Image (cartoon, rainbow, N blue to C red; front, top):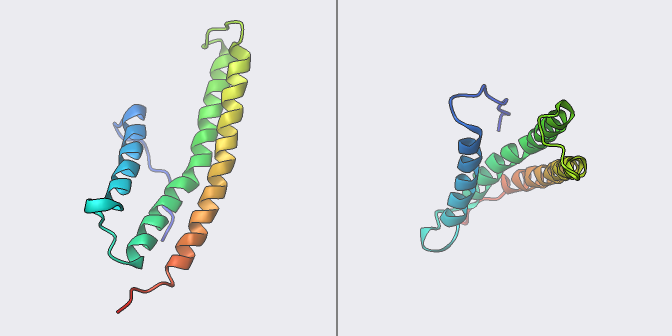
Length: 124
């Protein structure tokens, strides 16, 4: 699957974009389980894994950008400097950086699963 670069932002808000991701994962859960199961063969698994692998590969960048934003806002004084604000900002930043590392691991695992799944064929 060819890589798609991050596209320029449209009129979607941050909250709407994050909600769309959550809704999409929820839909995939529903569509792969129970009465709405739409998996018809290994190719379906391969397709889903490939798309998710791409999405997850972008998460480290996103988490880094979120961490950088919160750090800069704190330094600029745009975040109220309560008694533990600095500790909270560091905790948020550290957690986002750890999530980015975990996402890199997940992306690698999904890429491996995707590569292996392309070799599976449905029983004819």
